[in-house]
Image (cartoon, rainbow, N blue to C red; front, top):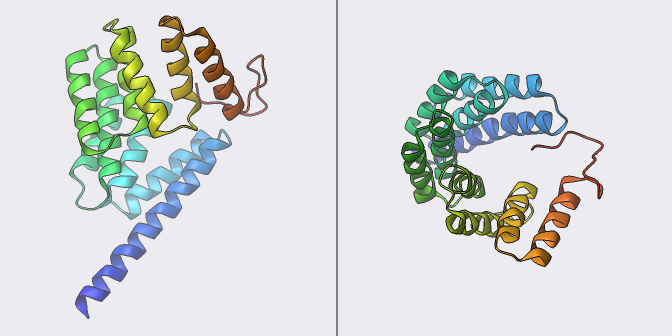
Length: 202
């Protein structure tokens, strides 16, 4: 009886945090960063033991608020959280890697990204490594490998497709690169000149 009750509570908690995070994602999709931030904050207040809320809140602070210190604290909470999946911890390690990269600590960034990939092969982390190897290390072979892995992990991710297109162009595969660029534009809701009716990430 206790096991069944505990399982019910766990599932209910997971469902609750998922619903709040979906609210945040919907707000981001319509370009309302403030509403997204309020949803993510609510997730960590109501479910402080779950990694999912802390990872999402950390990314909001890092990407939308440019609050590196707050993002780091949130990612650390996600990594240490007693509940939540490896996807959330992997995403938090990826966030830690982005913070390290922003601070010029490239080796530390790579270690964080590799830790993320050891937990889950997230497209976001492969994208981060592709950008790092192309920009900071000028290692275009590795950049292309991670760009391809990002597309394999998330075929419908326009950003991953754009990164892959850039690396294909560098390798002289102009036809493949053009196809990847065009698919990215379609998936992002852009016309052939790159214009879009709504907000587009990157």
